[in-house]
Length: 217
Image (spheres, rainbow, N blue to C red):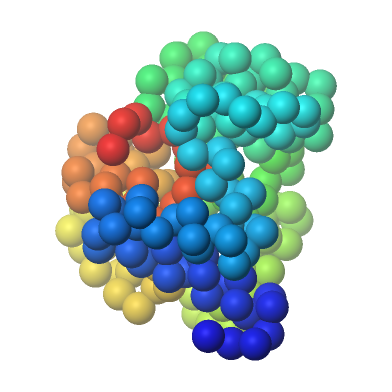
């Protein structure tokens, strides 16, 4: 493994994501050891569903990860994570119509980040909005793939047309984590019409703190 600490942390996270996708039982047995090599990974695993041990400003994320959607939004109200939490909660399985309507009242740039931007775009956010464009530009830099945003937008266009089979083909070659984020946005748009394997893929690749609540695996 690389001697570069930052690269070593990234590799540990990506390896665990891949193991979660291919062999969830093996991933559960290895995650404690993997978290020892990566503080970032250790922090993410702290939000996985289970006993609520997270306190302080990040508690709304822990509540959301456990499916306690209304509590999560209430706990986030008035904090810097409110928009982020509300967008994820409204896209979660079991979100009430009232919660979804509340998310529509957010300003166009509130709570837009790497974990919510595709949800926003899937529901009609203009990619020219400065807050959205900043995140999309950062994705291009992060993955060093100039065409990656256009590829994701083509996926969402096909989702909006109601063609999940063609949409999934568009994601060929998209990095694991970004592909999972695209599928989350597709599920949010299609609801029960989304293929079941999209949900499985997203739940395994993305940690609970990185996505809407998607129910029990």
